[in-house]
Image (cartoon, rainbow over the protein chains, first blue to last red):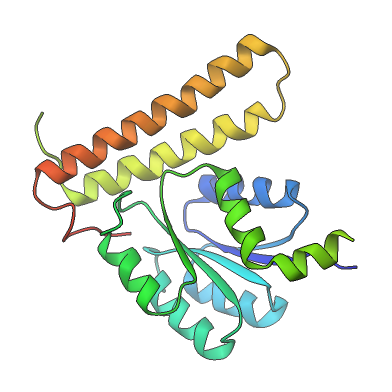
Amino acid sequence: MNPPTILLIEDDVEMLRLLTAAFTKAGYDVHTATDGRMGMKAFARVVPDAVVTDIVMPTQEGIETIIAMRAARPEVKIVAISGGGRLAAGTVLNIADHLGADRTIAKPFQLANLVAVVAQMIEPQAATAAS
Amino acid sequence: MTPIGDSAAHAFNNLLGKIVGSAELALDRVSDPLARAELTGIIALAETAADMVEALTASSGEAATRRRA
């Protein structure tokens, strides 16, 4: 059985490396992009089970990317991450939530927590892949 | 404490996120109990720093209304 596929979109290459390491260790088939435009190309190519996207990025930001992905594939699981702060009132995270992100997580966060959130969202697929 | 702006909070939180993530991944590769305790301490300190960033942002009156990703 194929492992679950995840697309990570993050313009900070060091953060992208950390995210990649965490999801690779967790058994995911990991694909990456460093901005929303590249993310959309990868999204169409790999058809991921889940997407983790930063919000503020060059070329195409996360909000625009979330809207496009949600329009293309309503069923895909999307997590928006942000350095804007850890209060629930984070404006951009709230916007991401309203525009289609399934979950929003403020930086800093523990990688294990993010992996757990994604695993919970795609539980049926993940459980199938692990069997 | 002197309040900080939203963009500074954003930059700090991004940096703290990488500190937490790096320490977390290092934990996976280290078995020495003392080293693990130090790495766990780094994560806890980074989270305390994030709380401080939040407080500084809130004290500037921007926390609820001007957050950017």
